Image 1 (cartoon, rainbow, N blue to C red):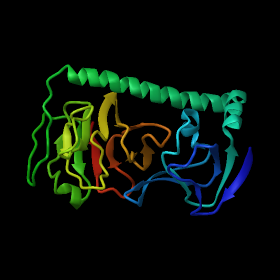
Image 2 (cartoon, one colour):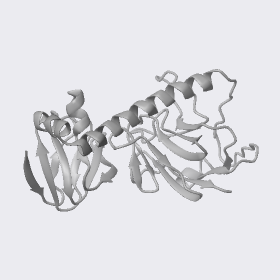
Image 3 (spheres, one colour):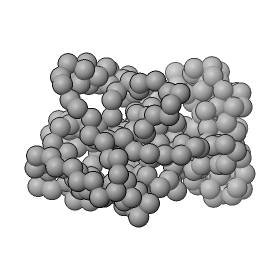
Image 4 (cartoon, rainbow, N blue to C red):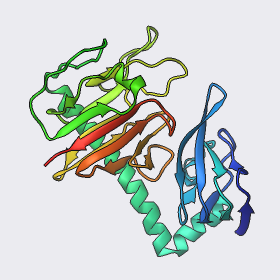
Length: 262
């Protein structure tokens, strides 16, 4: 293993590159990006002590995103063999990796259970299809609203989420089939799509509210914390009061406010 410096703006690896090693970030910040029709989309950032690129090494698959230094950074680069050796020789590193993998497995199990639960009950999708459309739901403690004028053109009503989990996704094109879950709220998007068919859900678990990214293409940002396939977790807790949820990258127009009242 060796330590390497990257200047701000330098690329550590690109989407599609061979997964030939793992970076451990020692200092600075790294941006995670994906290309959408040739344009880079910022999905979020990661900070010190995190591994970058370990999932591709473990799965023997190409890089799924681009890592770019957002500031001057210092990293430790480990070959696949060195990475596995460090995991084997460091209880702390092994625990962190096992916790991440267990969390992802638990989240996958939860998706299966939720899918079975949702498929077993009659639940009609609520769609926003035009301006000035009002949706009336039973009073609840969770409210969903649009945060910007662009999204307010589709989502002018304030949703009261009485049935959880509540799935948000994109309306299909003519060529697309049914998604895994029928979204409770479907929204229009235009290519290149920022919103996935099943993008994220809002759910209640263990007495608390959470946002879970549903393996979306471009991830979700919850109160500034990126979640999804390219980050440490697919899940983020919601706090009492107002929460910001952005679907599809940092500058995506799909910016929501999720309010929790007590």
